[in-house]
Length: 103
Image (cartoon, rainbow, N blue to C red):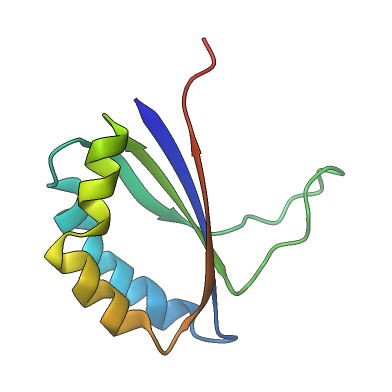
């Protein structure tokens, strides 16, 4: 199993519209072969000293896939191309971190 943390930065003020598109996308991704978990999250403000301030223009996507090959297939799925087209005006950047359990 692999884990993916995708940090998506959107244009200021567009996060609600971006999340509307992501709501449409989520069940399509969850139905993909090899998808274990897929969800969008947003920062929660806390008083924890080690936490950065909330980022109002960031969505963090938490994913779990059975294999790297399933992740690769996800990236080229037709609904992912449609998603990219729908969010292109909101999108600033994305950073992926792909990990696996250490033990």
